[in-house]
Image 1: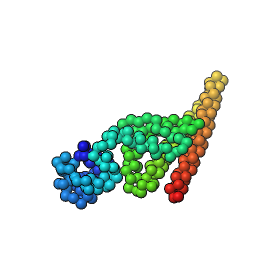
Image 2: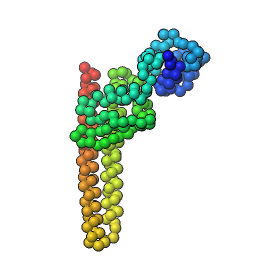
Image 3: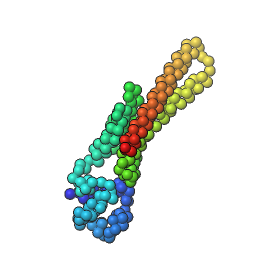
Length: 224
């Protein structure tokens, strides 16, 4: 049993930064609680249930009967949440120690968007403080908004950067016919790129509408 390590880990994840704070919430002496975390004393079943309920985890999680690989558990949770999107516009692409990368696209393929793993975990922990019925929807909404807003802003930044390049090229003094022809070709390529970026932005907006419809469907189903 890894109760001591798990207890400390889940306590901190739930936002209880000190053992004293959590002992007060449990209404037990500080020394009694620290004995649990230091493996000097084992709580009775009733206390284990109370602790698990306060931390919003299962008893299996608390005592270490479930897998301890937090990345695997987090990815499985996010996979389940993303299944709320029937068309799978967004999927998990890969992950690192600090970030999770999502892939956005339908027929249109935008590419990878990264979200800091800590921000996702913070959202999940905040969501656990609300009712179970809307916990999953809340996390789903966070992911969708974060991913699609990032995609839209990346495209907007690309358009703005290209506009700056166009202005700089137009400021250049007139050159030879060959140089002017080359400038024209470059300007045309940049303008075509911007048109494509704007098309992608419109597609991202359509995907956002799709998710808005998905959210509405979920809300309606929960109200039945």
